[in-house]
Image (cartoon, rainbow, N blue to C red):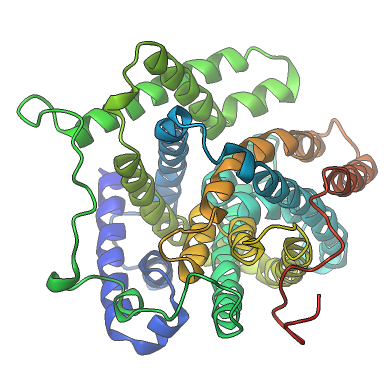
Length: 460
């Protein structure tokens, strides 16, 4: 019952966020999604209720319990997409370089930011008791998002580090602000300087956040099942439910692996959900049943889960718990935000493709918020997705998921006590060097700039 009440309150906050976005011009100019506005309102509501002992029937933990399942659903839904592209061979080669570049730069940030934050945390350890392992949660919050913050935070808590989930969720919440507060001004400046080739101005309906009746168009005309038998949405959710169940079985098998590797791999439900979705998708393809899956429907399900995921992740932050570390968390987040922006735009300008600006915005959004944050920033400068940036952002996932394995195993090994702090830092440094060399070897790190946000636009 608590979960349903929490879901209901999150829904009310989401409607409030939509109302505020539609009526407050300041929020429109910031282009903050309703989910972010709703999450902030919900965070203030819950923490005020806790401070003044007002019973709401829910606690912040109830919202964090919603985050992980929603994230698994989002990853399953994303993985089930793309069968229509698989059937067509065109355009595959042209997006490989962009996808590889995005994946390698993202992994560089995923590896470099915990190294920087761990060193910074040494400044706060004595006065604020902010242990380095808590600062190392920042890549899970920034680069991955609230779902993985809960997942990895739970693993680290099982090793004896209390409140790791809450710290991770706080990092992910700050990451959303970093994504939009830096990404949106960068997008607007790019439009002003003519870097965005497919964007003229931001339409009024985009600012207000909804379509009036005369502006509405039919975007979901395709049904893959007869509604008299089963609704198309019901079928898609049923396939997701099947994948989720298989993912639970995969987790139980991985739990048999020895040591912290088994504990870690079995707890990564979002990855196991992806494995399950690949299995189901492969079987459906062999049985020639992929025509029953519709990308537009999967995209809507992913969007639904992401909206509620963001709201619930922000509402799950207890200021009472993380308040003692807030100075440390904000300081580390500020430094990592600056590093993320500098590296994304430095390397993004040097990928060497015609839509590097759009790619860079998507990369920055994905490196501080989530993949949908990256897509939101791309949509500002490329509303009809005429460039390959959005496709390449999604196609970078395999690179991200493979190349980040050594990093999170190092961090989990340190949390469990199997790896010393010094070896962890040297390991993160070595992996960062390897990723830099990979960018050079694959020619994803060129010498010439393809765009400039500042300075003379004609000189690269």
